[in-house]
Length: 285
Image (tube, rainbow, N blue to C red):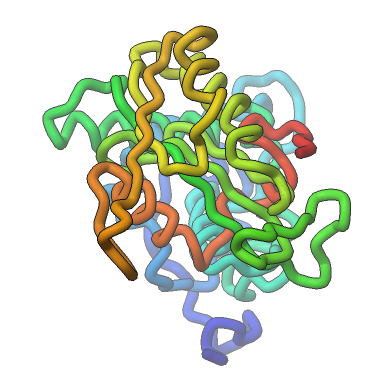
């Protein structure tokens, strides 16, 4: 799709929309107009209105020092969404977004401030409310998925999943009964599900205090069931596949997390998260 990577030259259409982000209203974003990008991952006006209120006020906007920002916050968020959805490298951002180094700098700062997690949690809460659910879930589903790593994947964060015959990394997630992510971890593919689940479920229950039951497949059997009940006060229920069925079978509860894993298969879980846990720290299997 060559139009996605055209140079920001004469054929770029300047964005004439009026933006109310801090960089536009109080900074210098007007000096760097958007290239008029229009991609499926760009936020709608309604989405931007929801997100706008969550962006923290920059230090320079409150007179606490620093240089006024030069790039539109809405453009920055659109660029981050593009990376997440398409799974591209930061330097592969289309030229009609702000420079990729600026986008990466914003993402790193917002992640350290907890903004990325807060955006996700607030949107999950809004979705649950729209479905008539309480903000905090009481039940969830856990599963993992191994993904093949490229030649650029560091050896220290890569491994071989002998069961799936995949060399690379493994994403572990806990979702609620709507399939919305509650906790996520990325490890070498060689990491066992039961081993990773102790850390992942500990974090899930610490952030979601009403979580009392989690469904899982047979890869989570053994001592983990008793450990969850004893340490986390959590009922881990194993849903087994019937020996009478062959091929693909939709299993109760398990299909929920499998649907979420399928939806995230073609993109990176979190930019820069490979080999890191959901809180940004290193995690070794």
